Image (cartoon, helix red, strand yellow):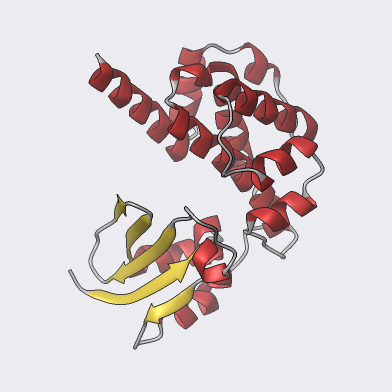
Length: 226
């Protein structure tokens, strides 16, 4: 494996981290290898350069995050400047908003079966993704939770983002998520009526990677428990 650059991103790169925040690192390699390892509060991502470059050209939100906020720790050949130069916004981010919305409704209705840590993490992902995608559509992407909270129309969103490190009841988190979705997204009849199996089919049909990963983690947790 040939690592050509190591980038710091997330709250530590923005200097808005607090006690307990993760340190997010991206290691760029020239091989076709993708990996994510979490050790304590360190979250390390391994990404192929060609994939990052293509994602940047396609306007991917993660590539956007890197292009706008990442800092180089090790980058002798200037891969971060190359990534920034390659980045182009998509015409819109409705597909990202739709996928986060559908996972959000699944969590609001069926999240009781998930372990608390996974549920809280995914709820925040849904809220942040919807708000980040909207900021990207304005060509002024925002990633910091406190700035997203300030821009949110929903009080529920501000509550979830500003107090994201607080320990709270799972049912309260699901209620806040449902309120956010009702206030800031357009709910379809499917979202309120479909069963778990229908959501799972929808996730597969729309290639909703985060939702499918959530289902796999839920199944793995239940298997381990049994």
